[in-house]
Length: 470
Image (cartoon, rainbow, N blue to C red; front, top):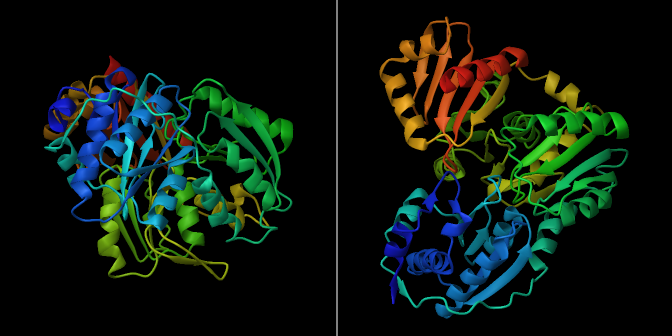
């Protein structure tokens, strides 16, 4: 017999901002099984269920990991429901409607040599406390010696499509020409049909047989150039894409300019008439400056922290939501859309903000909507393969002596305020913001900057990261 906590402790796999992440080589059959046993046995005292749903992204390692998870589910005497390759929000939505837990095999945006597992209780994403319980679980199990053959069920995919197809008028996207940057997104097989069913003209772009690690928070220079070229070639009203597991949107305007995720979230929340928001500390201050929400609560970075705020906000406000700088939109309460009720989906979703954006831009352009917002611009980038311990040391020392850090970064402005909610976020005397934070998913140091112009924000990020490397 194997003990879950011992297997997990020696695996090298750790929880990040959203799920457990590690190298593919670390996710052995028994490590996957240890996670499943720890997760399921940990929630069985709180929920009653006889089946567990599971789905995967398009990473080459995901099918075998799913097989190991399914084998573990069967060891527990439960029925696995395998939905194949679908977006994470599609899996989470179907499982929540069926009141059962689910597991998504995905590494989201991180490189293909890494992967991960996301866990959902019947009532939604696991909490940080649940993560601790999983790591310390005393669950025991037999080694996995045989992997089952998996056959995909289409029901979750169909339910997710129906969630939006039934909500909007059939002519919502009539007159709109939309490019879909498909790459290896888990949702690439459903987006075109869905958009066309709502009246859009669709052009599929650059589907890849190789896994493409799209980071919606740090868009590559190649993808920036691609979007501009595609818009010029095809005359798109918008370009839609997502990260690997389809829970974070990447949306470009009619000129091929990728929108920051928090700007997309702000526009979506405004159209939905949301009363109260929970957003990570890294999000654009245009949210507060827009003065359209009754309350904005800032949290640590990661969907579990955003979701944790929903319970409190739901006792005070009718419409509750959250979003992240990476674009994922979380609906914390039921809301009314076009006279119909849209059920809460407290996990990151890529489709809702895109639909609400185009709904608002029905008789205008995306650029015109963005231009009405307070003029605050953000940019972010990262140093890859940068030891987390080094990042933490830099930030700890900077928190003690922030002016020393600014001098090393060649920043001459004085400090107005500091926020250590997650990393180190410094507001400068000219209202610019610099935020340093180790990634919770990979050995990377992220830098966020905010200013009154995009050029200054970009320059700040470049300046900071170059000086840190030096």
